[in-house]
Image (cartoon, rainbow, N blue to C red; front, side, top):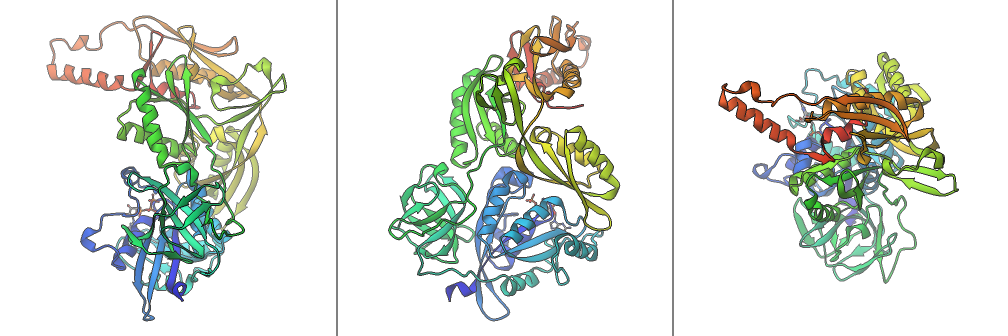
Length: 598
Ligand code: GTP
């Protein structure tokens, strides 16, 4: 009976199609937040998220809705992150729902990332409620987008809600649809407890707070619970719901979405996707779909000031409390000193961590170029995982190297298929399929090495297609490749942090591009600096950074004093994020240059 009036759903949308704005309107309409308290985009509560307009952490909010059918409903709106780096979290939060609102921008239409998430929702048998948003835009083409939703996704979009989240149009119609189309939860209160953890965050006061969806049974403070995959056990201290601020409840029962705290100190013991049951009366089987998350991209983080190593460790430990996917271990580099090799889910994840370290912990960091994990088989029949290019054994000791590939799906108007294929081939892509999804759009699928995607592939794709292409990718498997390590020597000394891995056929051209780039990036000093790229002992490219001749401000002597001050200020700015290696000052940009391809 209780469950009959519950609706659990999330919103699936491509970045920028208006998910957060729509969520805000729904919160307003249901009086969950008084209008005057309404802070824009309440669901994204990290500053960084708001600034970048991306949703990283999941959240669930309980709303009360009085329907036109006369009943009061309890809605749980579960937020999902919109970026490929976090697709596992998306899949877990969708698993907590019976329905999904699909938001499509009336001017942009369906994009690849939307598709990926809709397919996740369809796989989970969710009821999908399509919403065509931004119909207030002059460029809106709701009928065309409806047709697209039907052709591309295969959903009946005839009576899709036409909405403007910005202007508040169509919101009530949507709420009624949620009542009538999204099924009520079907669990059994009498069965042993089965609850899905779809998010977990660390809170200084309460410890780890688990966001959960109960399928069967009940849970209340004092219960002894077990996380079925990790095996850890705790005693529940509090249960409740977010509405949107935490509100304590006496218990949660099947169908409910809420939170559990249990004085848990270690977030890595409470991974997203795990199933909670009771120690006394355990469920037989965990909910399906649990997966350990593995970092895909590694890079070295080094404080520019070596004395800050301890601070960096502390900061990483703090971040890790709220980010179970972040991995780090100390490493040292001849060039950069002591730092950490960190593992990330993807490049966005890496950016976010780096930015938080600098902003919230006031650290000045050098980040080395992101790398993937290579599987290396050595001639003495050993096998090792190489996460740091400088640790790649010499060619003479290598039997074979395998690298991770992704299956990349690019959705693009047919006029741009040529440039997309060219780009994919350039990045060592192996063609898989090409499929027309309607009269003018094509899905192009390639298998591409992850290492070729992680850096600037998306930017290149956008510029090759005037912004029209969208990209989605999933990790496929490891395949053998003919790879070599390229070392960079400055002033005759190998700089380990600049070593990178390249396919043999590109090695010579990459070597040339990189020494030229480094020549531009590394400031001149009062002596000439040879820059060389080498494979083993063989130099494949070289150039020189000439010595500078005069003081940068010399020609301004006698001139405007403030101008000179400004120039000096600028130089000081430029000094940040520099690292002295031997006698040479290397700016941050140099460490990323090794990944640039042109
Ligand atoms: P992420 O948080 O990055 O996933 O984006 P989102 O999908 O949540 O998009 P968001 O709600 O932040 O909206 C993106 C932009 O579209 C913002 O500038 C909104 O103001 C704008 N926007 C949202 N809904 C509408 C609408 O109905 N009409 C118009 N004209 N603009 C809208």
